[in-house]
Image (cartoon, rainbow, N blue to C red; front, side, top):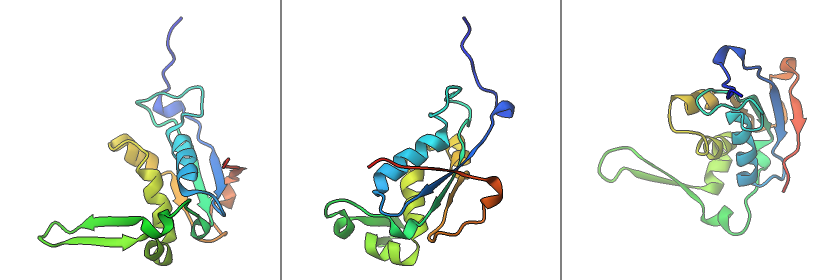
Length: 144
């Protein structure tokens, strides 16, 4: 019996809707990353993007467990001496909650061209409205 390898042209992509209201950030991110990679499909092939599109709504209502909401910080560096910038989780959620969810999910994807292609299929919105109703996304539940 031969091993089946998916070809990029024959991958069928579905649209999945996830409501992030009262969901734990890490559990939601792992579920979304699995769907973006295509590991939930039997025709998953590591070197081919077999994943589906993921639409996440209510990103502003995401939660963390324990003391992470107070302790978690996001860092970036400008490249210049003394250019380290830190932003707390609360500040990040106030300014741009969709970026917090995006960063958690994209951090679980491969760090190469294939991972960047998977990341483009992720659509995150802070509120309950999204412009992808024409694609008829299937709503799924995240356990936990």
